[in-house]
Length: 105
Image (tube, rainbow, N blue to C red):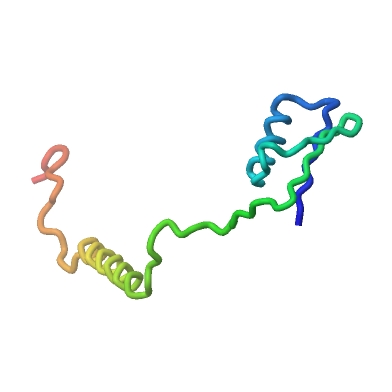
């Protein structure tokens, strides 16, 4: 399999030329490879382009089901503890905010 790169030089910018050369380098093109120009189009053929895998590499070790179950149990325990504190079985004692305004004795 070969790779054919081409660039129309008629309206090409320096950025276009840079992208063309970057693509050639990324494909593993020999720096001494000859360019051909037909009219206003510059061409380069790469006979054996370098192929790079596009699969993302895992960033860390994969978690197993034991790790997930421990994490889920921990989260459930925290939620249960918070729920028990919010749903106190004992009614509040006294007026926790103090007295506001004049007393009506």
